[in-house]
Length: 246
Image 1 (cartoon, rainbow, N blue to C red):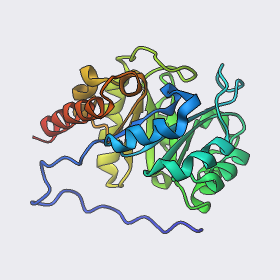
Image 2 (cartoon, one colour; image 1 turned 90 degrees about the vertical axis):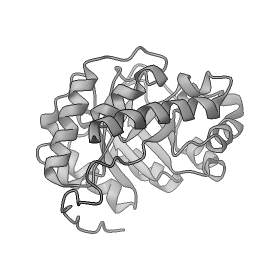
Image 3 (cartoon, one colour; image 1 turned 180 degrees about the horizontal axis):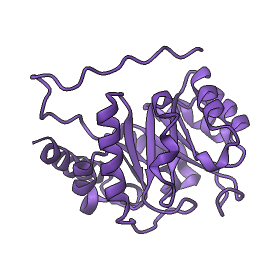
């Protein structure tokens, strides 16, 4: 399916100036109990999740091995919300096609893992999915220079990819702020997603920095009250977003 040309935003209006968009929460299934994956997915979607984050690792680009498109396809009927596929694999193009067929709504990949980044982005969009690039902690924003207008989303990694349960890297915050400024100045409707070490304690700072989507694994699946954990992360992030927009 061919993608439609983007319409440049006209910037904030009198009615929208100072207002912030709702922050969406994407629980990471990497922290779920894989013996009960369908039930785990329903537990967080019933608890208010906006997306399901699906981490795909190949033991090549990252030192871990997780799941493939067959699991995504099996999970799709139980998801109830869009599936956000994060490809930590090299090469990426063959799996882009497979995950699009398996039911992904949004596919992100790392620029280091593609020989032709623009071509991979266009492949995602041609398959009817939203497209995003993932920036590792040491990957500079300059990789976006010639493809920003083709993206729906940029995912900032606030840990090094490969394992769940890692501690948040604070240097992600100025990077998110710089990306927010870049996107706002472009007038393009691109969302910022943040993945790694997200929890209620840092959600305020992430919202204030400009994040639109927060990926949370152990902070949600490790909580006795998963709906409460999702709500706490969202509320704190939206408090930060309101402060930024004030």
